[in-house]
Length: 48
Image 1 (tube, rainbow, N blue to C red):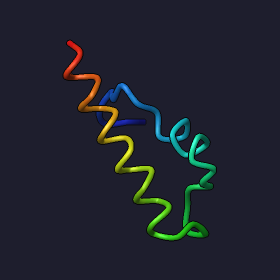
Image 2 (cartoon, rainbow, N blue to C red):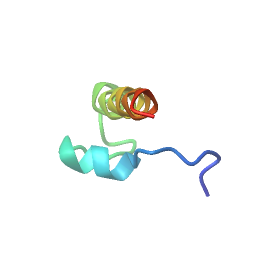
Image 3 (tube, one colour):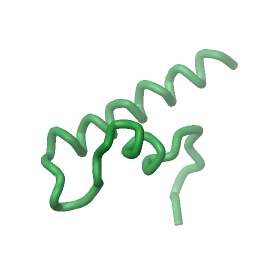
C-alpha cells in the first residue's frame, strides 16, 4: 500500500521507459523512472 497518493504511477512510467523495475534493472534505469516521477509530480502541482 502506498504511503502517499502521488499523481504519477511508477509502473506506468516504467512501461513508458521500457524498464522492468527490480533488482535485474540497473540503478540508472531505476533512477530514470524515479526522476521522471518527480518531474511529473512537480509539473502536476504547478498546474493547480
